[in-house]
Amino acid sequence: MVRLLLAICFLPCAVMATPSMHSLLINGDFLKPISVMEQLEQQDEGTICDFDVDVEEGLLVYKISMVNVETHRINKYEYRALDGILLTEKSSAYASDDIGQVNAAKMLQAKHMKFSELVTLAIENQQGYLTQAELDHDLSISYLELKLLNQDSRNTIAFDIETLRPLPLLKWD
Image 1 (cartoon, rainbow, N blue to C red):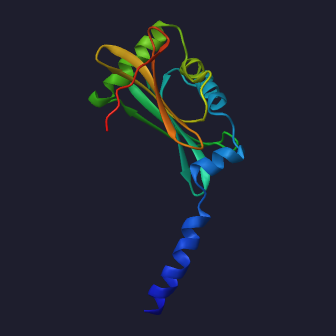
Image 2 (image 1 turned 90 degrees about the horizontal axis):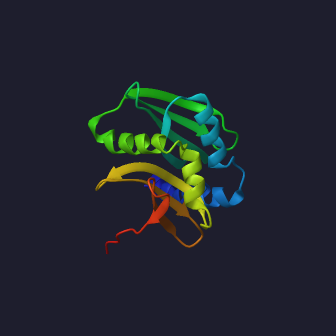
Image 3 (image 1 turned 180 degrees about the vertical axis):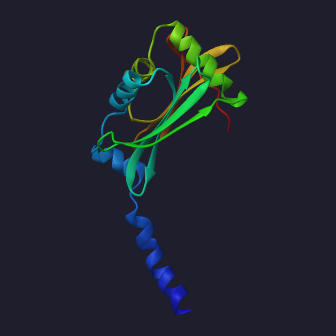
């Protein structure tokens, strides 16, 4: 019973001690995602197909996946956002559920563009912090889907790779 009371008393303090993604982003003590993407694009022969920001043990972590259409592999990297240090690296053959990303990556390569360039173009004049960017191909359209976090909300943007223009998003209740 005493342990239960102690847990109830101290659990809110432990939860409150973990910083939120928004508070870490506002603090600004991290490398810009685009610079980490550009660094990886210079080192790896693939095309970035997915980018995510996560909070692990109170630190911002960038998770980046690259698809290599020649070798049929996806390389996954995790970087510490604070200084760009590589934390983990994994490689695997891509599966059938990765085909949307593979097709969008092929379209991006055909446009002679890098993922970081596409993201930069898509978030131009947008407010908020980039928390996710993912290539996809659906309904014969190759596009980049982005999520931006600001103080009030999380916004989703879809950006057509072929036309290099925003796509209208369908919204569900």
